[in-house]
Length: 122
Image 1 (cartoon, rainbow, N blue to C red):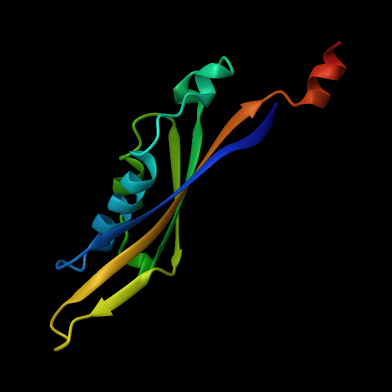
Image 2: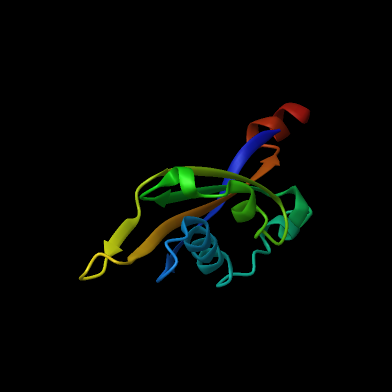
């Protein structure tokens, strides 16, 4: 069995007033996921719960993201969250508030037999 990348979706999330990096990351993941209905796993004979999802998050302050809260958004599959520096913080005119922007990629994998695996079985 080989881990195969099947799908990548991207999204953007914001927190306009609370400077909450987790909230922005969750909104970014929802933006990526909620525009799709992935049927690739079941079309290939796998359960949706077999999907492995790497969730890449980029925000200005990675240490402020609750990875488990982000992973809990997934409706199915097993998620792993990776957070790195990126995204964007935009302060308001008088520096009393900062708009937080998170960029998110959700990359879906399945452990599958490759063509070479199948040829070796014959």
